[in-house]
Amino acid sequence: MSSIELKKVVKRYGAVDVVHGIDLEIAEGEFVVLLGPSGCGKTTTLRMIAGLEDVSDGELSIGNQVVNAVAPKDRGVAMVFQNYALYPHMTVRQNMEFALRPLRLARSETDRRINETAVLLGLDELLARRPSQLSGGQRQRVAMARALVRTPDVFLFDEPLSNLDAKLRTQVRLEIGKLHKRLGTTIVYVTHDQVEAMTLADKIVIMQDGHIEQTGSPQEVYTRPRNRFVATFIGSPAMNIVPATISDGKLVGDHVSVEIPERFKKRVQAGQKVEFGIRPTEISLLDGAEQATATARVEVTEYLGDEALLDLRIGSQELIAEVPANQCPAEDAEVRLRFNPEALHIFDAETGMSLENQAR
Amino acid sequence: MNRPNRRQAVLVYLLLAVVLIVFLTPIYIIASSSVKPTPIMFQKPPAMVFTPTFEHYTQLFATRPFAKFMLNSLIAALGSTVFSLTFGSLAAYAISRIRHKRMNDVAFWILSMRMFPPIAVVVPYYIIFKASGLLDTPLALIIIYSTANIPLTVWLMKGFFDEVPRALEEAAAIDGYGLLQIFWYVTLPLAAPGLAVSAVFCFIFSWNEFIFALMLTGSNAQTVTVAVMSFWSSDAVQWGRIMAGSFIILIPGVIFVLTCQRWLVRGLTMGSVK
Ligand SMILES: Nc1ncnc2c1ncn2[C@@H]1O[C@H](COP(=O)(O)OP(=O)(O)O)[C@@H](O)[C@H]1O
Ligand SMILES: [Mg+2]
Image 1 (cartoon, rainbow over the protein chains, first blue to last red):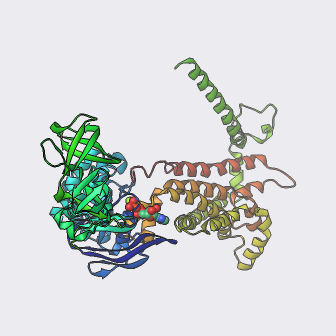
Image 2 (image 1 turned 60 degrees about the vertical axis):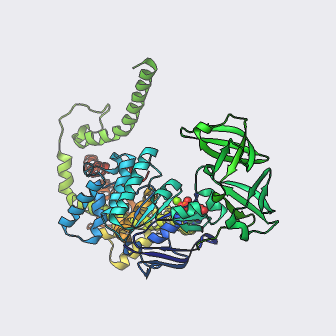
């Protein structure tokens, strides 16, 4: 087990910076997920930790030792590649053996570890097979087994589930979670799938364009997004964003007007241009006489079983609401809405930063 | 089988027959002539039925140290093959993996060695080998043949190395292996078909080579190709021995190709990366 620390780490290809001086602390035994859209620099960051890419600038430490100039083999890391990278000319057993050989273990210890890992990952029947004789899911497990037998200090995963079908993905995701609980090894896990991130992570690192947008627990990034990017990236369907101006203690937008929640009152000024965010689940339909936040027309309804998604139009603004399926109105109906004020987010229109009191 | 398919099959077999006849006729002439008694060798039409004789073979080994010449050929060909595969694949690996904008120029420069007409450099080589005392030794031939074989090996192997996924080498690097170990345990085994192809080309080229062997060897390091042609002199051409020698020359090449064939398999990297 090792901690990892990145200080102002930069990755530059030629004249182009693809990772812009990121700072990140990963504690011993922590499960950290790097999450972000494709091309944001997750893989590059992971590969720098692995030692497969040079750090262009800044300092990278593993276990309190600066490793900028340390070869991959001396970093105590094991990696599961997105495409698995199994040695095709070796059997499953030989793949694991090959990973163990540099450790110079006794024959009996090598065998013990291989058999134990094979049983743990359900590969014991497949040890004599070549990678070409395995299914995608089995190959994925071999890749994990090969990393696991070495009992490294740090596990690195690069989108390990992206080549599996949906059902298998859920199953392996659970297995990875269990594995972490059992072994307690530090894990850095790269994915663009927010469900994987939310379910597995102790800490999510949300990246965009080579910057870290926010670091925090799944609850933190979901309930207290630091900016509009994180707010709309996390959660599905995405948070609704409505442009508004502060006026008379209210957020006034196109055909909407919302009371400013108490906690924001001191943080805004009259006339300020902002955007407020509301998650689809925090919009409810009113049937009584309560004061409505807005009136909307239902354009499309999508029935999902327990819930229904409503595509709503308020003036020029489109919103999505998620309501219990039994409350689902007819298409083209006029509905009255209430936005839960507790769940309201307000962002500065220019910087996109949340006006919420940030923990950090 | 339906009709058009059948017609196609017939056509294919006809074509194959023509190709086979073109390639096998010279071999048949060599093989049959090598066991024909001299008086009927050039009979027209060719004698199809005769009592085979092995006199040409016995004469071949009696009048020349032909076994020694075969050994010379074998040493030169195998030596150059091993030498070329070793250094050619190492060079090819570097060219395949080092990212540098001038790397293509280096690769092309290596290939350009191959474009030299051998006859143009025979005399300089003669002088060099004479001065260094290598004239009429197998080592001289190994060096000469390798100058032609290495460029070929580099180009062939570069193509095969390019096909080996980087991720495999990265996996091995993380697993704890150094550069040469990765090359030896991961990259090279996966480029084995390339090694086999290169070995065949190197061996056949060296085994068949004539001009350099003629000019740079004498009684000590003479190869079979030169030895066979030595039966062709201004006073007489001893066809029987030439045919017997030629037939013997054919055999090692065939054996070598058949040996290498089991490595000529495709899809070696299947299942490694999605
Ligand atoms: N070898 C390279 N040379 C130049 N640019 C690269 C190289 N590798 C990656 N990049 C760029 O760096 C950015 C981040 O890539 P990557 O880390 O693979 O993204 P992610 O894994 O988040 O999808 C991308 O814009 C990509 O084009
Ligand atoms: Mg990636």
